[in-house]
Image (cartoon, rainbow, N blue to C red):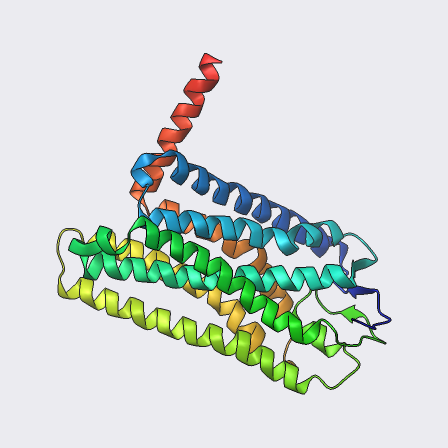
Length: 309
């Protein structure tokens, strides 16, 4: 049971300048809206178009669901709090925000790994692709990603949820996360800091390195067996690599960089909260002819339905 006297945490936010606040509000609202709409369009397109009922698009739709939820954890409150003088969140609201941030972050990490495996099988073992990437395996990968993400978050929270908070309650950020949260505890958190670095930082770095090496291997295979379809494979792979870099870049900075450095974490957090979920559908749709054709087809069907009604 938690015996903290702190009932809420206060965010310092991004800036006190009215002009910059207006800029951040317009920027965040635009990108958050575009992120949600873009990712939902991908989910509906993949679900409704039978031509996209393949392992790659199934995993992509799952990624879009994760991105939609992930950007909705911190962005709406950040947008609402921009012009407030007192930017506060309850103790359990902060815990909830941390839990879902890490649960969804862990889920996306596993999904990106699954998507890399999917591209490996498609390019290196094309004749066995549909046999290996069966509907059962795709469902297993999807469920496993969610389970691992939630287990990852529960393990970390189980160590910090009962920490005593008896004094300062000001977070120099616009959202709750472990590094800032632990600094406010009225006890020695050095071991917990190390645990967070290992659990989130080291895992993200190792996963990133493994994913990059796997994509380098796949790119080498494509180059070695270059043919008419290599340009399509390279386009798909470049999209995947871009998403991996955008996702893991800020995360590795948050959990591996020394805490006493510049206050870049909260500005990178904006990138992670609203820009990366927005860029994912842009990258996958603009570089994918099948997806663009399916979206045009869906729009045509909706227009026809509207005219008939």
